Structures are given as structure tokens and as C-alpha cells.
Length: 573
Image (cartoon, rainbow, N blue to C red; front, side, top):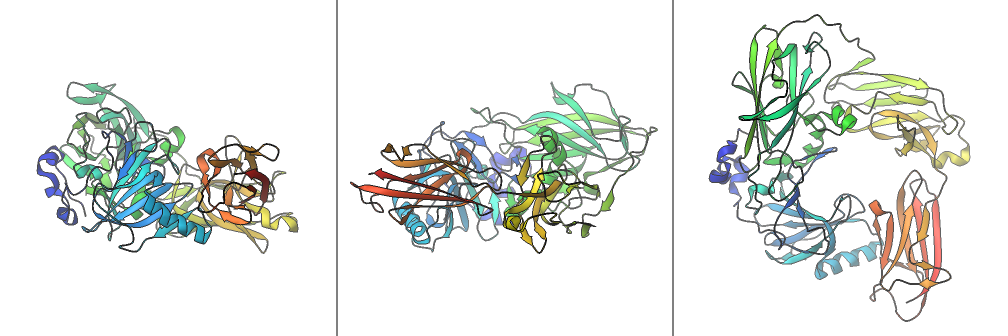
């Protein structure tokens, strides 16, 4: 799907270097969705936990409530509202076969808000993913469709904006479409990793990955200790790099990378587009284990065999170099942003065999392209084909149950190995009272703190079964404690004090809030949930509430194990 892009010429030749589907899209088709200068907090395809960033994050001057406009003519095709993810989001389909997405919104334009609010009241739900038929909510280019916000999993006020090819379910890089973003800054190269990838391989005499510091030089970047790196066997390289844009301190992702050995291109990628369903392959595209240990995100510039990303322009021998010839070799990185600003790193490696003590392998060989499973007394765990990116020696152990658990503690390797999708786990309950069967769950145990986290799961004939997304330590725990509801602006004694809303802090000790229901005078009303702030609130609405009288509020909050708290009060409005 890809071919090599000459990033130096990208600005002048525009879209002529795109793959065929993109050549049909006018780079000037879309208007800027905001009426303020555009500075970015994040760009397309940044390395994020478990996904590539699918669009650009436009700063909103640290505020919410700024005008958000339709980028082109079309119609609202989908509206989603959730306490997580994009929070409030609009999807607008356009005649050219694309969809634009607007996320983390504070509110919708009146016509859109009325449409979705009616459906929320009809279905009596806050969270919703609603498909809108064509023609129901048409919009014009530049028409206000929403106000910017901080909803969902947003870490601060901004507008998340995407451009997608609708039919292909492919995210496109918005910066390829004439967005007024200024960038004359070159990418920064921060560090190098060299990985031994075969049994006999070594890097600087060691059989573990080695990190090398980088400094800026007159011609780009070089190793801080600018001496050839001694290597032997099959080796791979990785690089830590970020991009900066004018007027913003935020560290963004790079657009393209090329790796050459002795002037031969062995690995390259460019981030002009990305298939939506491929996004989780980011865990193989970067060094996942290093990111989990230290929060440092390195681009892995060699391919694991289970990595099926379609972004790679050129890959020779998986990007792995066989350094067994006893010779010196020149290694070069060329890293660019979408505007053609380019940085380079150059260094040498010396193929030299050294005596090393082989690292003993522990555990059972699990192959990425096979079905793998653990069957032991009290546990069944499967890692199906495709869940791993490469072969691993899976380490498994079992420890006796602790007092707060209803099973032994099962160690399923460790959290430094990524799973591409959730894998089925069954654990047999031990000494679990019948009255707690509906309250039991799979619980993941933090190895450092011992804190437990819900991994869901349901009881079935003596076993608790569910799907886990990360490897680590698991046991069975119960949740019998109902969520806590604390009023922030009303009490039974004082009555309602806020002129616009009823607000509550809602927390749960373990399994998490699954649903909530608020009624006023026996009728359902729309409470909205801000998960990151543990906030549940109702905004007074004359359409659904008669003003000038005393009212009875009943608010119920239920966690994933069916524990329910009820808050009742009277207020005047």
C-alpha cells in the first residue's frame, strides 16, 4: 500500500506521491475547524499507549467553549457520547468519500444537541453511539457544529480532529491537507537502542539491548561516545525521536524514518495514512517493554514477525542485520516531519565476535503463529494465534491464595509483553461462599504495590472466566462494596443551592461504575458522567422539568458487580 516518499519535496509536489486512493482528494478541500490560530498539542500517528494517535489535537488556548466548525459540506453521520475516549464526538460524512471527526466536545450546535438529547431521553441513557441517516443533519463548510471541550479521556482542553477515508476505514494525516500549522523545526533524535536478536548475538559484549546517548553535531546527531559499537550476530536498531512544531512545546510524533546500512535502505516508514483496525500494532512498532518500564518510547526499526502494520515503505530482511562478517559498517537514520524538516543520525558498528555467556532461557516456548495455552490445576489460559508479535518463553507460576483472594495467585509471564487482543482466562474458585458468586471477578495484582484492579469476569459452575488484555499476576477477588455518592451542591437539610446543576462525586472501590440512573419526581432525567473527575451532574432543563416547585431526586449508581447505592433528596427549583 505504501511506497517511499521523498519528504524533502513533500511541500512542493503535494499529493502526487500519495498511494492511488489519496490522489483523488483535493488538499484544499477542508477548512480549518476552528477560528483561532492553529497550534498543536499532538499530531498524527504519535506513539500512544495501545494505539497510534488518529488525528491532530488543536490547542484551544487552555479554554473550553470555543467555536468548532464543519471542515467541509456534508451531513452528521454519527454522534457518540461516552465518559471515556473522545467523550462527545461528531462524525461528518462528505461527498468526496471521507469523514471528519471532532472529539472531546463540550456541547453540540442546538439542532444536533436537540436531536441526540431526544434519543437519549427515549432510550434513557447517557452513553450513546448513534448512527444518523443521511439528510437528517446536513451541515455546510464553516458552519458551527459544536463547542470545544475537555470531555472523555482528554488530559486538557483541546479539539481532536481527524480525516478518514470512510469506506476503507482509514485515518489520513490531516497535515497533508493544507492545515495552517507552521513548522520550521527539525525532529529531535534523543537516543539509540541496539538489540541482540539471535542466540549468539551481542552488543558491546552483552546479550541484552543496549542504550546509547546521542548529542547534536554540526551535521546532525552522533553518539555521545563517538566510537564504533561492537556487535555480533543478528541485531536490530531502535531510536527515540520526537518532533516539535513552531509555537508549541509539545513533543509530537515523527512523520517518516529511513534506516540505511552502508547506504542500503533496509527499513522505512511514512505516516500519511493508517488503517483504523491496525492501530494497536503500535505496541510492536515501538519497544513496548521499554515503554512499560521507563515511559520512554523508542521506534523499533526492525519488524517482529507478528507485526502486520501496512505503513512500511521498505523492509529488507525484517530490518535485521547479520553482523558476522568481521567488518565495519556505516549506519544512518534519516527522520523527517510532514513539512520536510529532516534530521540525521550517523554512527558505525564493528562486527566482532566476543565470548559471551549465553543467557539461559526459562519457561515454555509460545509461538506467535500458534495457539498457546496454560492448563494447570485451577487455571485455563489461552494465547491464540496472532495475539503475540513474536515468540516468547512464557513463564508461569502459582502461589498459595492470600486471605483476600478466593484462588491461588497465578503469574502469567509479565506485563512487559504486549497482547494484540484480549485473551481468555479461567480460574477456579476456592472456598467461595454461594452468596459471593455474583460478586467475584478476575483481579490483576500490581507487582510493585500489591494493589488489585478489576479484570472483570463472571462466575460459571465453579470457575470465573473473562478476557484479559495484559499479562501479569491474577487471582479471584470479590467486590461487595457499593459505589459512594457525595453531593457537591445539595443536601437534605439545605436543599438545592446551585442555580444550574445538581452535581455529585461518584467513586467505586474496585469493579468500577457500570451504570447510573437519575429520576426527578419519578421521571428519568439526563445525568452526565465525567469519569476522569468522578463527576455525575444534571443540568436543569425546562423541557423535562417543571420549575417553581419542590422536587424529589432519586439517584442510583451501580458497579459492575451489581452493588448499588441510592441517594435521595428533595430540592426546590
